[in-house]
Image (cartoon, rainbow, N blue to C red; front, top):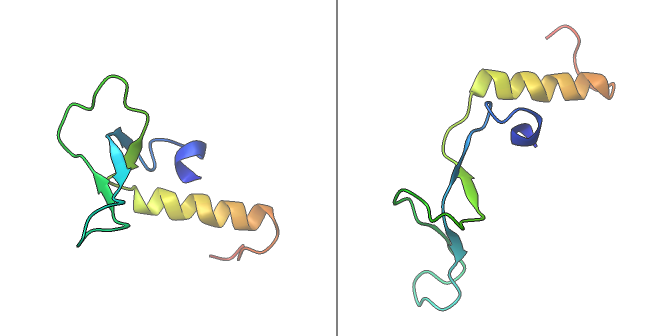
Length: 73
């Protein structure tokens, strides 16, 4: 949700992402292809970094808006 509110807080990088459904040792694992660039028709992205302080500021702000945050933080 933080990415939807402010994409610069949790930047997403386009990359192919698949769920392994047939591997003996990797069944159920999420596999992201980090090779760049992603194909032009790539529809998936992954966050590889986060602006930690800005992320938590968004969380605290949201909690305060719904009345359960600590206004003294």
